[in-house]
Image (tube, rainbow, N blue to C red; front, side, top):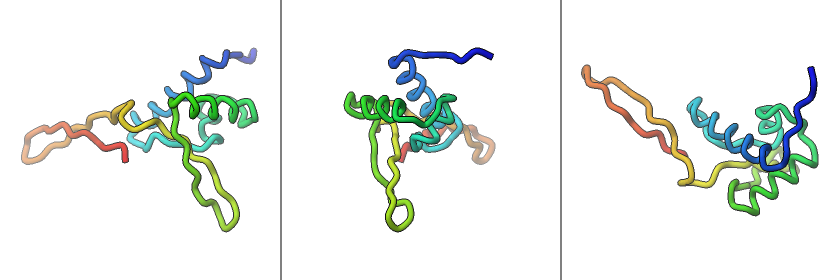
Length: 105
């Protein structure tokens, strides 16, 4: 099976779509670089970190550091708030169907 090569802009679009797909599954649209690499079938390498830092500089992604253990920190990437909305979910109350909007945070 041949490897698929994408240019930098295609990879950026894949990252955004991968985070949107997490929203569609009802999960929070945030992930570490390792999880993003897994979602887009790419190795977690310095090339991916370079793409992620470019996207943060462009404003397409937000980044925050979380404490991981006593001495380590990990970077968590997310979509900017307000740029994409969570999917609506239907619930049934007393036989009536209602559509509710889930919040991002």
